[in-house]
Structures are given as structure tokens and as C-alpha cells.
Length: 373
Ligand code: NAD
Image 1 (cartoon, rainbow, N blue to C red):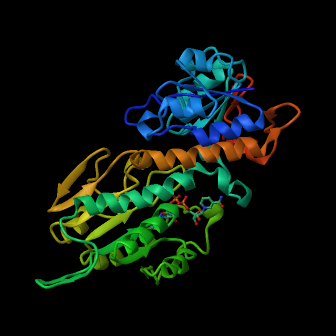
Image 2: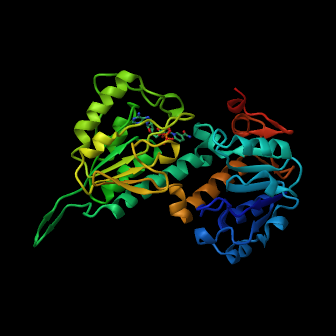
Image 3: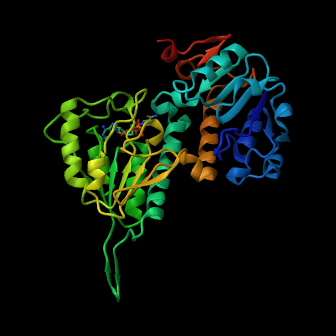
């Protein structure tokens, strides 16, 4: 059983899908591990550390040659995996809706694509969930990115020269990233408020010491919502939310938006007129910018200024904390494969709920029902 960990090819991708820790664990399971030279450099892991963990370090062709399993952060193009065993498993994030041609390429190449972002939201799969592990650090980094663009301090400071007041931070969308953004902004000493459409988040916001700002007159999503996910809201809700946000946002210094709806463009939460109502020098970080953006005028990959307000739209925020996100991503992959490892066959057997949910291609065909529907 040979596991190949390949170097990421996408521009700006600093993460890696395996660490010396997971290499050792895979070897302990009975696998042989090969790592592409330079794969971990951008995440502060040198080739020597992989070699010391027991991996063979070599060029792409040698690493992929004869591999039964290939691990990536962003799925490599199928034609770069020629030489892997027929039917080899490739576990990575695939962006299956956005990059369908890549999925079809895997089917044509006879590879078995496993989309880690399709991991079901069940308790048993929590330790395998890349969306949670990566969002957590994105929420943290979003606050630091805001602080870096902000020309004032976050905490209240009483100095001999007078008092500096605490920054007001508003978090919109309180999933995994939003909760970590609240916690991080609180740690920095900000006064934090937050909103979501799911009623279950109210208690979570308050338990972190932040103020919950909720639409009261129109029903949101009761409890957690299906699978923890939000859906598109009614026009009535959107109008009530816009009014609530307008009143609140003008008093904020920092806004972090994280709202996503699976399979749909991100909801628009902040209009240009609302940005214009904010104080000059305020900062908005749009973590949903690559999914269409929560903020009018946000540009993916740029920091733009509108009405004196900076709108931060960094792409691939998890890659901005590459050492830690790589460690967590790699553990997600290990937790997943090891949970299904059959000792006698020395291979994972993926024939139940989780395997079915994340398998995109098999036997030369696209097989995932979310892509066939
Ligand atoms: P997400 O990334 O899909 O969305 C981010 C947040 O935006 C969500 O809280 C969503 O409700 C909110 N949102 C959507 N539309 C909005 C709007 N119009 N206005 C304001 N907010 C809006 O969410 P997520 O981070 O993946 O987490 C969602 C939930 O799923 C959380 O409760 C999380 O704990 C749960 N979860 C469970 C598991 C598991 O059990 N394995 C794994 C991951 C997440």
C-alpha cells in the first residue's frame, strides 16, 4: 500500500496534505509513504523532516508511480497522476460544483476521487471534516487581517495620555469561522456583537461573551438548520435583516462576514450604502468573497477602499496560516483513512455512508448523487 503526498500546484496554495506526524502514523498502519520534494516548504516543513519520519522523498513521477492513494489539499489535475495504480484513491478538496471538468477528468483517468468537503456532518466524521478545521483558522486569521488593516487598537487602553477606546467588532455568520472570529476578537479586547439566521447560534454567541443581534419580527431558521447549514432566506427576512444591519453597522469599526449557503452564491449582507454609513478607517473582511461575496464591492484577492472603509477580500485564507491548517488538514485525512483501514487487506474499505458521501468517481464514471442529480 503506497500513499503519495504531492506538492500543491495551485497559485498561492501554501498548504500540504501530510506532515511528518501523519507520515509516521500511516507507516504505523502498514503503509509506505512517498512525499514529493518541496511539498511542505511553504508550510515550514522541510524534506528532511519527512525523510526523518520515514517517507521516501522524490520527484512527482517517482512519488506517484505505483501509488494506491494520493493525498492533496487541492486535487491535482488527473493528467499529473499518470503512473498511479488503476483505480487509485485520491483524497483532497475537489470543489466538485465549481470544477466539474476536473471531476470528469478523474472519471476518464479511472481514478477514484474522494471529495473531503463532502464529508457528512455527523458526529463520527467531525475529526475528518476539512471544512471545520480550515474554517476555524480562517475565522481567527480574518480578525488578525482586520487588525492589520485597522489604524487603531482593539483593546481599551488607559494611558497617561488618555484613554483609547475598544474597537467594536461585528461578526455576520456564526458557523465555525464566525465563532472563532468572535473568540479571537474578544481575546484582543474588542467589544463584539454577532448575527446569524440560525436561532441556535444565539446562545453560542452569548456564551462567548458577545452580544447577539437578531431579526426578531420575522422567523429565521429554527435550531441548527438541516445538517447545520443555512438556506436562502425569504425576501421578508432579507428586508428585516437589512434594516437591522443598517442600524447596527454604522457604529462598528470592524465587520467580519462569513455567511455561506451550500451550493448557492453567498448571500449579500452589506450594501454600498451601508458601507458609506460606516466611519472612515473602518475595516470589513469578507471571508465569503470567493463564493460571490457578502459585501458589495469586495474583490477576491484584493483590499479595496470604498467611502474610506477598507474591504479585505483575501483568497484562500486557510493558506495564510499554512503550518497549522496543514497540520489539521493532514490529521483530517489520516483520521478518515485510518477509520476505514482493513488490517488484513492493508487498505481502506470505503463502502458505507462516509465513503458513499464523498466518492465522486469510480470505475470510469461520475457516481456521486449530488453531481448526478
Ligand atoms: P457555513 O460555512 O455553511 O456558513 C457560515 C454561517 O453563515 C452559518 O452559521 C450560516 O447559518 C450563516 N449564514 C448563512 N446565511 C446567512 C445570512 N443570510 N445571514 C447571516 N448568517 C448567515 O457554516 P459552518 O461554519 O460550516 O457551520 C454551520 C453549522 O454546522 C455550525 O453549527 C457547526 O457547528 C455545524 N457543523 C457540524 C459539523 C459536524 O457535526 N460534523 C461539522 C461542521 C459544522
